[in-house]
Amino acid sequence: MSDKAPKRRRTTMSRLKNSISRDQKALIGVIVIIVEVFAAVFAPFVMPHDPDSQEYKMLASPSFKHLLGTDEFGRDLFSRIIAGARVSLVVGISSVVLAIMVGVPLGLVSGYFGGWVDILLQRIVDLIWSFPNLIIAVGMMAVLGPGLLNVIIAISVAYVDDFARISRSEVLSIREEEYVIAIRALGSNSLRVLVRHVLPNSMAPIIVVGTVSISYAILAESTLSFLGLGVRITTPTWGIILNGAREFFTTSWWLGIFPGLAIMVTVLSINFVGDWMRDFLDVKVREV
Amino acid sequence: MKTYIAQRILYALVVMFLAATLVFFMLRAIPGDPVAAMLGAEATPQVVAQLRANLGLDKPFVIQYFYWLRNMAIAEMGVSIQNRQKVATLLVECLPRTLSIAFMALCISLLVSLPAGIISAVKRRSLADHSVTILAFIGLSMPNFWLGIMLILFLGVKLSWFPTIGYTPLSSGFAPWFKHIFLPSVAAGVPFAAVICRMTRSSLIEVLDELYIATARAKGLSEKVVVLKHALRNALIPIITVIGIAFSLLLVGVVVIEEVFAIQGMGRLLIRGIINRDFPVVQACILFIACTFVFANLFVDILYTIVNPKIRFESHER
View 1 (cartoon, rainbow over the protein chains, first blue to last red):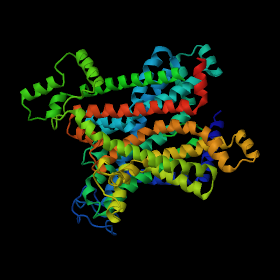
View 2: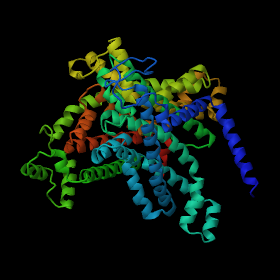
View 3: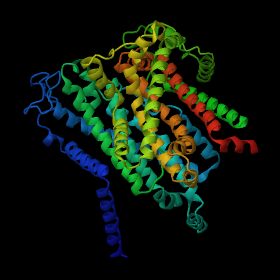
View 4: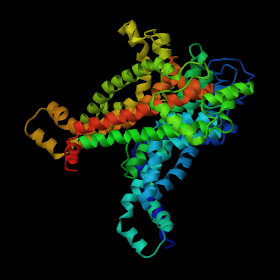
């Protein structure tokens, strides 16, 4: 048993490597994400200047000293974009993790027990579904007020329904499988069946949708911040940088282009990886 | 089919009722006193009490709830705190702008994405297919407010092909109206177009692999007839479903893009409402957007019964 486990893991790893090296888009995506995560984690060492320091020339165009130029307060744009990557990745990942932590149990319980529990929970899910995702986030921000934690909560609420729906439909198909019926007949309690047997088997679509949702969460954060409904304006994020520089786009093109490119490249990379995962894990999920 | 449509209408009404309930609770969920939050610190106690009475917040909770439902049902949405105008009037003013952009965005998106998806599916793995796929990915990954900014910078400022801000009503001529809403519509429609394009491609590819297509080809039908008449009709069913789901992307796009192009539509009304803590306006806007989304999906459901004979006949049996 003990010598078998690592061997199995190795074959999965090699299968993974094999598959990703054949998909160029996914490979580029993975590399970009790794570079970005590295830059975000080690931001204090990677940033060439202090992102909040206002001591440089205002609205300087890109040069060797300031790779991407400076903003209207004389802050180094490249450093601010790296600082923004931190916020974006934190918001993207934690809001999706939060949505999974709430949505998946909801869906599992709803699908496994059925009956009135299912009806009640499904109406809640329908309710969230009846609002476009960003409108939920906007409405939540109206109630909660600005702040990083509030942005994470607001975005995660918007995605709870997606994960509840997916895990519910997975449970419905797994619940009737013979091995689950057998385990139940052997006297396992419901919680154990759900956590030990049903959940692991419904992981694949959750992982795929979760990955793609991170990209949408990052987009949502930048949109909220751009509209002035996101994090506090002192927090450097890509959306905030774009919002602050609005009046200077026509004269200082770098302020308009680079933060937007940062958002696009990040989201695109995650989408590439999500797309590859869908094929690799052989999951059929709806687009959007 | 009639029972099915009746069911869908009933369902849409239930969802609307639930949405109205949620928006009702939204105002009450604001930490602390919502009235104080709206008026700020300088408000006198009399003003606070008066606003509280206006909003019905001085009455018991249950009664507040029924008042709210009744008011929403008769479109009595209260008065804006910011400028004392009736919220209903504000909405009516904003609506043509938002609808113009949404409608134009829908048209442009479908005109571009459906043909692109079809070409991509028919010429699988060709250069055209790869380019369409990459473009669709990029479209899906671009924040639409940023795309709006880029369009303003290049087509508006640099080339001055289009006006960069504002709106002209349709009544003052088609050309000025179209020129003002073209860029916002493109910016708002791109993510939606990207989703529809990818769905068209995958749905059509699936259908093209089926045996009846091989039969149609074997009969000697031209490729054009096979694809556009035999395959597309079946491929259209999942595409229509996705149009319904992705409609929210378009709606959200319009809301955001109005801010970029400084067009005083629903979206701008909503965003400004939140920033100014003008809750009667915020409530009405959110409910209205949810309403539009639900009814767009109802429309898609009904369209579905027309395109998909399976539903048409199944519901007869019931």
